[in-house]
Length: 215
Image (cartoon, rainbow, N blue to C red):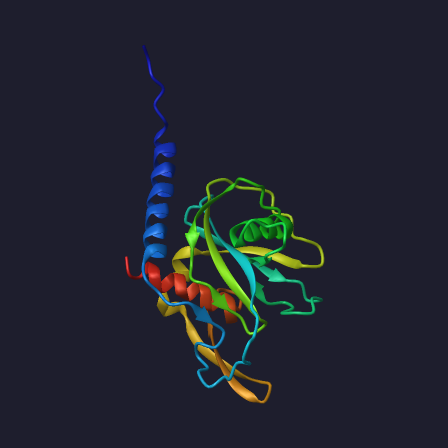
């Protein structure tokens, strides 16, 4: 009887997927606080009795290129909320969604054309509270295979990728500020080339960077 052995390239790819999955699971399993848009602004007074809506975003790590890459989007400039900003694919949980993970995957299908079943969900980061009233759960997933990116018209202007190594490097993060509603507000940024990644997206990524640095 003869057996067919996997090619060395296939073995290397399998090892890469396995190692990254192990590292991500270890990072997500570690202790860590929830985050919010107010982490750098402790003086902000939040309204009492505020109701936060559940949402999910997908931190999709693609293994198609020579190094792991994280898929991000640039929101359409005509949107009412956060026009032109860099964001993950994702959105609020609808009644038909089983949970926030299902919401993140559905939104990724709608916003960037991610096929069902392609994402290997590894786990989630602690929820992030946004100033717009959402409890956002970052869902971390691995994509072993490529797919045809289809930006959602009117919602997404561009889909691009950033090396995971850059985003998990805490030294790549800066703290900047601007005047918002009459007060100075501070926030994280993690620039990459022409892309200005800031606000909630940068804060959630920094949470992943902090955890990856502990394993």
